[in-house]
Amino acid sequence: MSQSEEDSKQEARLLSRLKAALWFSIGKAVDEETLKHGINATPQFIGALTELVWAQIGKLCVRVRAFLAKSEQAEERR
Image (cartoon, rainbow, N blue to C red):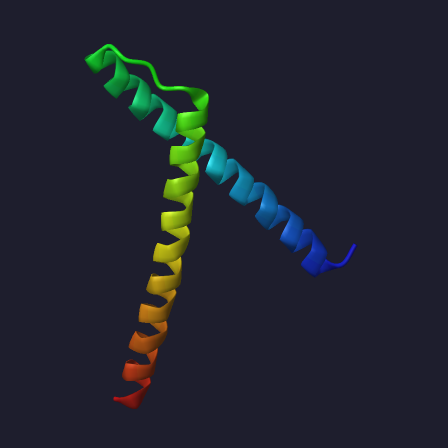
């Protein structure tokens, strides 16, 4: 196995663990709120909310990277 394949597998494992931690955190927050209001949230709702938050995090990462690239270009021009 090449180094890049090994790195890709490690990155996939890390992303999987991060997403699982996000799911757990969102689940806890949803459970706290639903208990306050006397309602229930299904695992499907928590999963869908997790996917939504995950997608938003991905979009934010793209924007931050673009901002960083522009900042570095501006710094080089000085």
